[in-house]
Image (cartoon, rainbow, N blue to C red):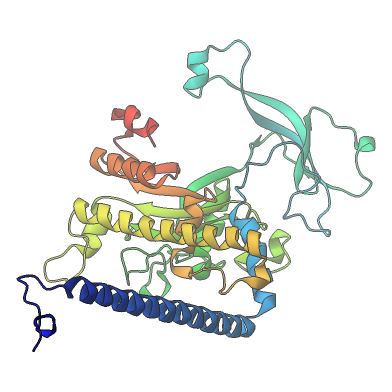
Length: 398
């Protein structure tokens, strides 16, 4: 055998680099195949989802989507207190004639010109005038002495007050009349729904009894308007309603019903009732029960949890409405979120519901003010509020 035909011997593998290049080429090829497969799978999945979305969208009611989108404008609207003159009271009935009250001693609500500011602040030195009062379309039009009949509508009723006192109707901002009826019987006590401590979805209107005798008794004392609240057994009792104490045909109304007694039939403002402190603890926090709250710490959590859920609903609704603005309501893949459970609280966070809360002590007041700041809502009134005079600085933070 010739020398050149013998296999060469070397301490290094001269084919190692070649094998390494081949391995790299195989790896790159595998990676390319994997990327191509993933790309194809992505598009297949995307197309499948589009088909599924289109299929699901086809099952949605376009009428409801359009109605949901109309609701968006209501969600974005914040009510305002009325200002300026009105043409007519929303409760006025065509059958109701104008009324002239003659010879009354009228409380004007204004202090005597010569009285001091201290007297006015103390509720003293307010003026009473001898005057006539003319009402038309449910609105007080004139208060002045000796109103001439020739200046009035042709067909009106006249009442002679004979010098008796006449004031504007008294407004009671905290009442359970109609829901905690008299006589107080188990079958007619409907002011507290104690199936849960947090019931923002309850409505006092649903339990309101227009034939509760105390409604007439209250009216006889000069109260013409009341805010009918759920009871104070729960931390969040539910939605409240303002009613007028004019009931049925005998009071010039077309029917006997809770709906007909609403002071604001258009419900420009809504109201709700909360309660703090010992009330819910007294009802729920008893040894042997497996639900609370047992302490003010528990109450604070229940409040915060409820408002947290409401804030999630507000965000979900805003996201839906904003998407519908961009895409069009008919192209939405689902309906507007609107669960009854948190709707009232969500409206409160939007500034559409006047929150009335029943709190006595400093810890309760401070905790509730803390909730208003955490979840960015306002308190319309603290009820009972025995220790508010001690902490004006805390209340200003609400």
